[in-house]
Length: 171
Image (cartoon, rainbow, N blue to C red; front, side, top):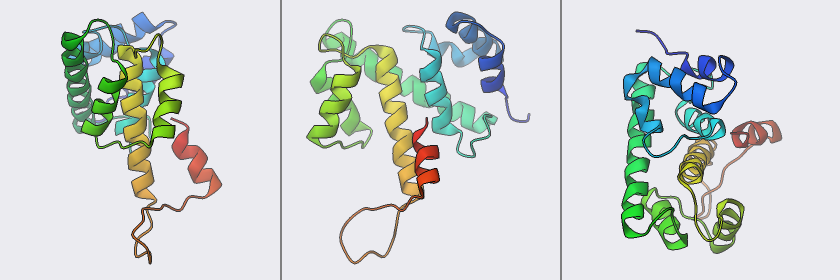
């Protein structure tokens, strides 16, 4: 079938997060992945959609939707594995491990900024864990799409207009 307009219905047809998840669950039965640990916030779901919505149409075709399901399932399993080691949430070393596993290498300053923004009492919740990974994965892919090649140095750089930068960072 054609693209599923689940993001549009998901956002427009509801007044609260719980109702949003019921709508999403009816579109695709396997979307219970989003509900299996805790309900994700609407903001986190928007971040996840932007991860796979490469044409920025607000729609995901079946293939992209399945990719999103697989991604969320993998992230959920990572989080559950961390919870087996400790109770409740992800700690700082576990978050660093998760970032490394996703090939998201942050310098110490950027990790500290991320940790200070998202952690509560030295831990990160499931919703924030998913949001962080989704947002950083999206930023990484958007950076790659603007990457400069044939540079006279062994460096990784990208070229953005201000409009492109704003669009690409407004997740």
